[in-house]
Image (cartoon, rainbow, N blue to C red; front, side, top):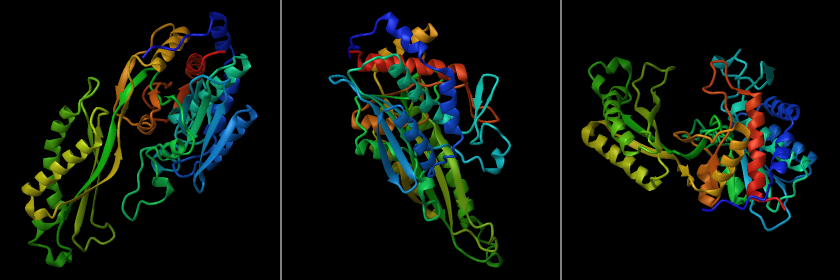
Length: 421
């Protein structure tokens, strides 16, 4: 795909970069971090984003995904005849900050703190800092007086974090993640030609990422009082799961080899095991559940991954006929990729080269993003954002300088894709 005609001169490029305002960007980022928004409780931060967008004079659509959860879709309307670029970021955070193991750690609390060139606080990395960069990039375009042919959209969406409903216990909005907001967005007017997602990539261009299949494998056994279980230990569902788990562990390397992508092996996480009741140990567990997060490359159809999981379960049943094995799949989220020669990659390269003086590195990753949904609607998407390296033990933080530079790249990329009149 050929890159767009570059209608910007060097003077306009410099003007766009110079209009990214550090203080304003930091203030916006901190105001978003200061609003708690764990998955399922994003309404207040959505209202803050809407307020900012309305102050900027953008056309704003406020989408109620469900009670207490809204997307914001704001548009800098162009003059016509150009393409639409979307900036997409999720407003939900991975944690609430109330978890016992996170208390006292500043980067896991919904309170922004600026110190030594860093912004600390829950969500700053994933990904309220990116949303602040989107807004600042649009402000820079406005302040520079650049008139674009195409539209620039800023989508702040709910429910991206990898969480899902399961069974009778884990129900409700706090478990409706995995692109719930972007699913709603694209079905209700969120249509663009292409999209930049500012997930934390350390300024690398992520050309592809894995999707996932979440599956349950269960064993069963008799439900009897401890007094009558002495000679029936091998029938205990937890004991039976031990043998099943060993076979699953032997299967994992074959899957990881089969699903290698972008020079990296696939991956499977043994995410949870549940069996019995701690409050009633006088009974044997009638069922034990094993939960697997099976990562699926974008080059593999989800139907193929589903069939492979079915083959695994069938093999386990043959090996353990007495275990009463049952199974289900309860999450399917495909991967996503974008071509190296896509014009959006060229636009990011150009902006990154001007701001950083180098061409950004490429990467493929095994985490997921809303590109999973967007690409299925024909919105070709790339992940490119800032981060301060691996998460600190004290939680999320971002370098102010990294945020500023990323906002500058976003402004340049948007002006190139949407074309200056």
